[in-house]
Length: 319
Image (cartoon, rainbow, N blue to C red):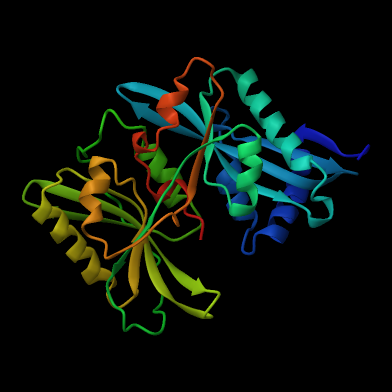
């Protein structure tokens, strides 16, 4: 342990950090690393490493998000890629990297809070580190073709959403700011494949950000294609309009996926509008939201109340 250093990441450790992440996350590569972490100073992530003899043996990252609530803007940093070499587990290293990350955030002076959706193995550690478990989302499933047995070729298409409609947003909910810069980074520069689909009817517009993937059930060892809704936005919550929006999405993917899945907060206007269009609700299976304030001036009670968060899977997109 005398040789292990807990430090803020710098370019010297880039290759070693990528090698560790590749080892822990199958499919992770340098392109993904560059997309996540090679950003301008204004959007610079916080990255902390544990280093032993020049090699990165633990890696923790936090990525910048902007949230709005009642006209105010808050800066949140989401806990992202986190990995520790198996040979260095249970040595207290992870807790030290988390602590240094929080100290860096405090020293920067403009960050309001940390949040995340940790894996089950990390959840207890975050709670011990003082994070609030805000709540656990439900996984919602919309069946579109239960008889589809084999995957179809995945669409590789990014469709421009065109001029930005005025989407509905609850001012009294904590909502991520999604603008053109965010869409460019999140969907077009991302090495994963996405489709951004618009549906219009009369004067109303809906926009869906989707990704095709494969669901795998370890217990029964079966897999089949699915579609994940990362985000969906509406200019109206009119029931018929939203119904027709989903019918349009069904028609595009009925030969390509068994179901559509997503999560949302049922305590928000958007969540209430979406709930009636999903046939299966798997309680407490959509990810645990955690929070810890960095800025002592913000209202801890506001952020620790689950129904105050209007989030969808574009903040996670994990599988």
